[in-house]
Length: 313
Image 1 (cartoon, rainbow, N blue to C red):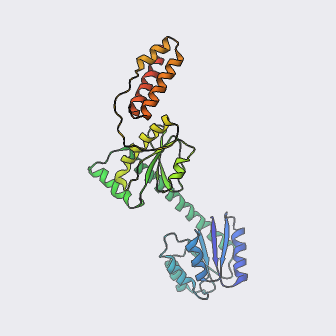
Image 2 (image 1 turned 90 degrees about the horizontal axis):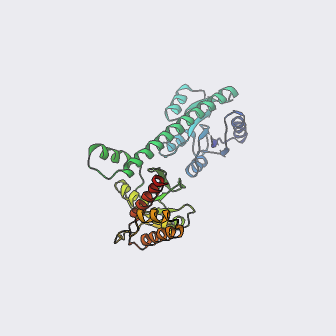
């Protein structure tokens, strides 16, 4: 557990519960304290709390009202109730309201430790299920990104299933040869060694100054544009490779074809004219950046050149 919050109006009982938490054997990063339900609710609203240990009777806001408020929150913590009221009906009411266990004061050490371990097991299960959901989402996004938009039933079903959890915000797809920071985005593996970040951040400065060579798409919106973003960002990355710096997708259509052929390069290699080979390859790079040669043509030229070297030498 990362954070545990104890809501109890009596200071000595709070300190005692804190000591029990620290000695329970369950790893806990931080133990926070609140004197009543209102304070507890303020803390839960601003921080991610894994476990709330709460009394029932407290001033301002009691444990029952606190639990009712928690039901309306997106990320409510697990709840352990510690009460001095040995009332079966009351205990059942708290458990139905969402409590995971109900312990009577004075709290028995073994019962408390057992409850802590049970709640930790539930948190571990939550984390495992969340991890599976995230991985499933990545696989779905990968499929939608790598495949053009289609009207067929299965493709449209995937769109509908994924749309609910996809942020309704403008994004850009960023292409790079390594996994990128996901602080404000979702990283998806592409073909080969390429990685694609669905980047929701509006800070272009971070992309321009990124140490990893990247190319990014134009602003896009909606799952239907993922494949378009994939194509644009991969194209931008290829041009960035020739330019030597990060680039945004440019819609300029190259005019003309590459004037250098693999046969020319292989002929110069055969004549041991290394400088001429480098000059020709350099001229191809210039043509790409001047948009007089498509970047994919240059890539095909390099592939044919390397294949020819392998076959010949």
